[in-house]
Length: 325
Image 1 (cartoon, rainbow, N blue to C red):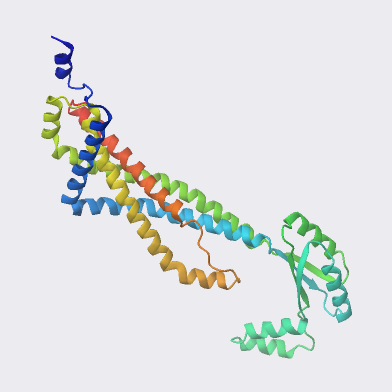
Image 2 (cartoon, helix red, strand yellow; image 1 turned 90 degrees about the horizontal axis):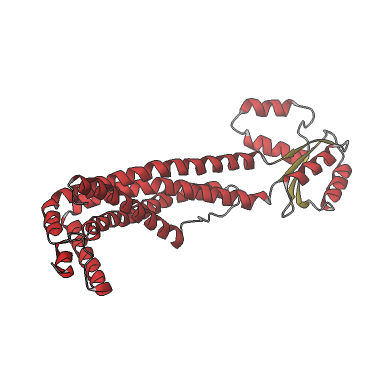
């Protein structure tokens, strides 16, 4: 028997014809995959929906973590201090303290709140409480001290602010100095929590997407076992037998990625109003970062990867059991 006939009897012989036939085979597989998915559109939509949910939740957590981190970085330059004077400090002493603060390099701007303004703000905030208003009206003197809100200069860190705090506390006319950083520390803690939750949910839901795709591809294999047997008898290679199902997985991944992008867009649109109101109370404009072309392509790429992995697992298990590979 010559080499040519021996090759024809080998079921795993590589197809002849070179690169052109390889491209044609991929094109034919792509067309078959499109036809197969379109004929089972209901089940395909179900798989896309599940994969989309699996990608959307880690995606929204990642976007939240990224935007919180950006907000924290943008606000760190505005962190500052609040200086509370002793009760009964004269306006001349307050004016002197203001002039000294404006000369300090850590200070960008200052805002004075007199004791009378503090009392008016307090009364306005407690307008619904008649008892508090009666108590304030019965006092002979204003118990609220004057204060100065300090906005730190660009690039000033917390070490410099703490040094300024100690310096101001040493002055006799100043009662207390509070660094406004508690909310920044909480913001960083929330950002760290979201980052870890994103990785945990990403891993769990990624495994879920792989299992869903694997189960769907396994059903496709079961429906084409006779066809695979014929392909093996006529000399189809391992790659040719696996290729249609890998394409199925990639198709499910692409559809799931598109669904995830749609879910993320709907979620961002739903929370835009409340989020804009919240940031507006801090005089910060709403700018959603991360939801760009690179992020969308990443979601699609991850969807394709998960779909291909799920399909490869199903192919390895089922076809090996059927003794095709």
